[in-house]
Image (cartoon, rainbow, N blue to C red):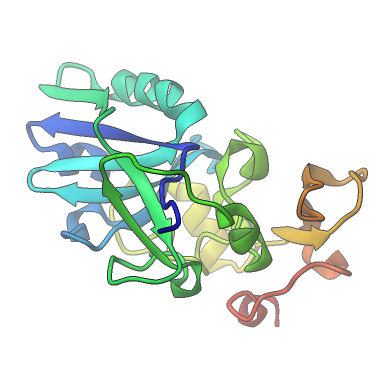
Length: 236
């Protein structure tokens, strides 16, 4: 059986008093709607609305699990602890769990885009293969290397099109500028995936093994970019 563990992901567990209320005031999506086997994609932003960390949130009874980049897990924990203040909430890595992915199965579909496949959290197993190329060919970007850290406005990361933001919830960090951009339809740049044999001047990151790169371009200059069906309505 093929491996399913995404070895570049980690799981953070938040447990304690009113964990959802704590996250509700911080992240871009509607944490109060979080339900078992119905994960949410969300981000923690700067006050200016730029992406710092993106992640998936999972309900685990009263706890919340954060499915995040393994390399950024400690930094994310540190940032969340700054906001925690004196709340009785524990924020720690859960080494007993791992993030899993498969194109087939009965587990929850990725909340960003069903075509991304099935995703779940369980004990670690054999490493999965093919996830990054599959994701990129669908035009979906994620992580610090692709989104940048304090470099890219959240809506420029295609957050609205991929269900990563709520425009009806209350305040969260970066909410004011994010809402203003949405209501004024001022998303002038987009993170996009392009075929590439080498890095160029606009390359955010190049993946030579799959011949693809991520770039941050103005919407009138998308050129040879992969324009998936889910993004086309936003560009018309």
